[in-house]
Image 1 (cartoon, one colour):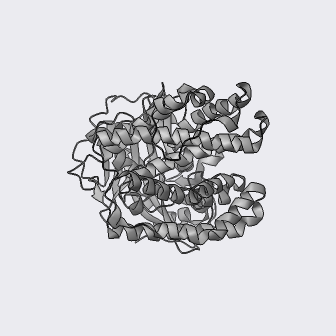
Image 2 (cartoon, helix red, strand yellow):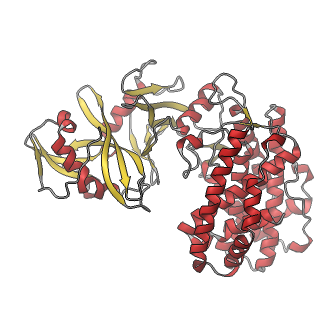
Image 3 (cartoon, one colour):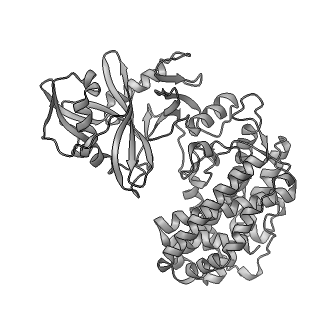
Amino acid sequence: MPKQTSIKSVNTPYQFNKSWEELLDNNDFVKVFLSDVLENYIVKQRWYGGKASTLKYIELAEFFKIQQKGEVYYGLILEVNFVEAFYQHYFLPIAFVTNDDFSQIDRILSIEINNKQGHIIDATNIEAFRKLVYERIATAEPKDTTKVQYHKSHLFKNKIYQSSRFMGLEQSNTSLIFNDTSVLKFFRRIFADKNPDYEMSRFLSEKKEFKNTPAYLGSINLVDSDNVNITIGLMQEMIPNDGDAWAYMLKELHKVFCNIEYKKIDVNTLPNTELYQRLTIQSIPPQIIDWAGLNLFLQVQTLAKRTAEMHNALGSEFEDTAFTPAHYNNDYTVWLKNKVLYQFQNRLNTIENNLHKLDGLALELANEFLDKKNMIRKRFVDFDWTKLKGERIRIHGDYHLGQILVKDDDFYIIDFEGEPESTIRDRKVKQPPLKDVAGLFRSFHYAIYANIFNNKDHYPTTQENLFNAAEILYRYITGLFLGTYVTETQNANLNLGYNQERIFILKYCLLEKAVYELGYELNSRPQWAVIPLKGISNIINH
């Protein structure tokens, strides 16, 4: 049974006549630890995802030892219960240190154990802990049946620990760099199942040898008291890179918009193309190449190839049922409609409550969204699976330019955890691969408009001209991507369905994605809400 507490104040320093190795079996310690002490610590952590809710109490759902040769640390699975009647699970590894080298911020609790004064801290701050975890993976046996299971891939080469450091500021997880060659990601928010990032990474690199994602090297899984396998850590190859594709694309697109003035381009005379028209580089008019530069289109082509190769790998499995392609059916349709309609209603409420934060074009587009809500809802309801001949596969699920690393004119796809708002089960549902493509198209749209809104002073032309240029550019980028992607997937016999079906699914997923983004922007940065609103307007008016 989880141990619960309502104790709110205890004298400091806390003293226990128990050894560290027995401390978690001591109910008095657990009560002290789970009270205000841990609550105050946890709500300040970057990886804590409950900041928008009111914490009620914390329970210790599970604890286990992370140990080697007499060195002992604890892994805690904390159940954080909220006033709003839901809960989340978090992973926290802890250590006891007797020195004061660690800053006040890293200390969870100052304590005396068996007459030794010290502090309990997050164990990831200690090099000895990081070394131990690395060595446990490096020496893992193939069939580990213990409670804490360390796994080593055949791709893991470097057995000797040399160094470790934090990767940098992250929101939801903690990543450690080892020997400057590998990265161990500790998942902080824990789900009662294998993490999709672990499953997808291991499948793509071990089983399909897909080269454009960091190689899977190892993992740490916990078999909990209900015999459920929970992923705690994922180790992957570290890919030295030039940054992510979002930063890269912003920079490239800035040059394109600067070229309007620099090359004295009359936007009104630029040749246009139909939306979702499949293009090749050869079919892009010379005026467009001259304006945007050949390099941008070559990069889009490469990214389309890598995306297709990822989907070809994910759609080519016929043994492991978690990855075998599936047809559309009624169960999937019910699941999809429930999900999108719930999300749509949530966004409608959010926009109605946040209209006062909007002005100008954003307010105009928000009112259009509200005026056309029945039409949008009908688009979501109009999903007739019986007309669809394509297949569903496991997909990335949260695919955008920020999830792609750039290195030497190539792209590496990372972070297969899935959509943050979705449940762990929903993230593993097989979906149309074009949902990932739609995610990337929305990301292109974001990058184009982010440039316009963030660099108004750099572009002397009118906003109307910039918007016209943006739409033309978006059509050529997405058209080239689609042309390359469809050719690559067809060559590998990935079944995306017929042309009309592909466009229907793409539009459906684009609308779903833009509505999803709208909630995020209204809650986090209302001044950006204009971008998904513009995307929704474009989709429903074409």
